[in-house]
Image (tube, rainbow, N blue to C red; front, side):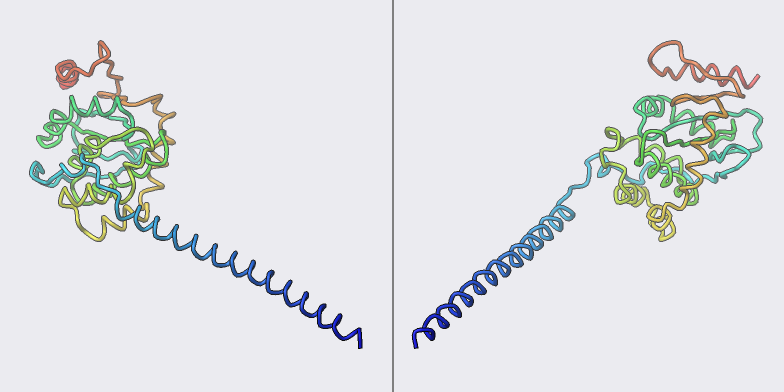
Length: 248
């Protein structure tokens, strides 16, 4: 008779222990589920609440010129070539994240565009990518814009929104938005950007820097001769004078 209560006590203790363990497990599972929901909500909020950079919002197609045809030619180290048959050749090496390239673009872009549109020179853009992943993304997107006849405008717009290196400004989302604001809305452009269609070409341009003795950007050759500025600033009149001298 005395043994029967002890058996009941043992069972009660066992059941009590099982209940505690079960409650702990349930609590841990609930915590994991709740944490997952919180992170999901935060992730969705983050992705939807990120505002478009103001510099991109200012881009529009009002200043677009007529579309310009260009070719990507292996014999020009996969550069973007305008007016391939012109005897005067200008090779421009840039990285979209390079701040000095932006200074060069700001000073020279209008003049270089005139040279291209008036067929006054063969202009070859070598968009290299030694400053990181965002340089590669931007260069790929610029090559995508070649197919749309809008490299000149896209090139200018990218420099217009340039931020600090690898800061996130050259995400595929932003690169596509730049295109849309320039009137580039084709599915082909979107897939080209998202699929990194020109990634191999971008790598080949980067690999060709050493062969061409390009050690930094911007680097410009006029008829094969390195153009050097006289001071720290990029002076349009100096560049014009060098181009005009090479025409003779």
